Length: 386
Image 1: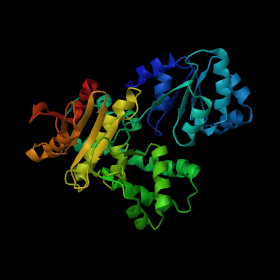
Image 2 (image 1 turned 90 degrees about the vertical axis):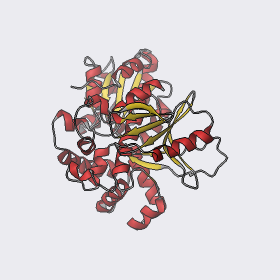
Image 3 (image 1 turned 180 degrees about the vertical axis):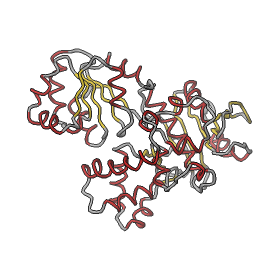
Image 4 (image 1 turned 60 degrees about the horizontal axis):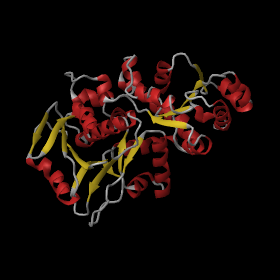
């Protein structure tokens, strides 16, 4: 089993809070993480219908089975438990009693904020990061993107297309139906495919609505469902302190690049070499690595993008205590002067810029034209230094 980078933060939080809540997409490894980190703790899953019924009908009796606390998996199925857990931890005043996991951050987070405010540490676990499973090996970027990063693909050596087909069917039938009333599952699947075709792009609700024959409000609601289930991530624009007209719409990214590629109908890694969305797919992968770094260290996202009304753009803006770090992302291995255009423009207008970065499809690490140039395997090392 691969030790997750977030494990040490999970241990620290359990020493500081009576409850730690770990959320993330289905199959991101939450159960394995919590059981490996706390092997002596009792474990119970509310996916089991009999156990769920017991917890719903007799929460005191259910929790009474675990006087020292427990790992409770998929706890969002029985939100009434949180009030009872609050009573227990307030009485016992023992840190690390309950480790809760959930695959949904929709009404789930709202309920936690009401019942366990100040009593729970919050962590988000996404699928593997690049550095958790690769070590600067010779695998091509096409193979890496095609596989994606869901742990089961690697642990069980499942072909990505087999796993992702089942994952989508399970996700649509179980999670989406539990959150919204769908009359046409095929229409929602088409919506997912259209979103995959727009990964790495500024989201246009009207365009999506017109293609599907639904209202903007419906599209916004469906996007919120994808966010809640950790399928997509919306990167917000950075527009602080700029006396310019700045784009205010977010950019859409899939949280697992393999899932986006599967939805696009790509059947072989070689098809990615000349794919029309190659640049956007590589950017999606890189943005995901920066986000995983934040989450794996128990931190919120500090990621944005910049674009003004005349098209000056930086793919990623990282907000730090010492200023912002603009990052340009290119899927090429060959560096050209135009790659630095957006970075130079941003540095000119932004004021305090601690450093600027170009990420490319290589294993490079150098300084060029007053910018840091790195390959994607070095993203984690870069983040350590920010």
